[in-house]
Length: 140
Image (cartoon, rainbow, N blue to C red; front, top):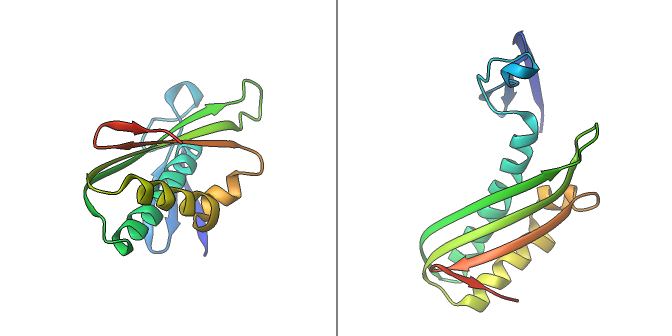
């Protein structure tokens, strides 16, 4: 995997990854023009995208009928520089004809075995999760 960021102007960069282009920028109070997301936000997006792809793939292999699926991330940052992530909660919201134990297992497999972004963050960031199935929160 290779990526590069090409400076455009101000705080704006065009990131090139696998033939795709993403504009990143800072907020105006930090010298940017808010033309794209911030890099830290893309880290959380990478986490929810990675685990989301794992979970939907696993549920499909388990022949679970998913009608809607959303994965959200809520991140907390340190107060002092570098303002690194201290904790991230991943919230899974799934709708459909799904066995709750299979859903929990799919999430566990992603978080503990398959998601490389999760594995990269876990040594220094507290990762927690919440699972919702058809509007009801599943408890461990």
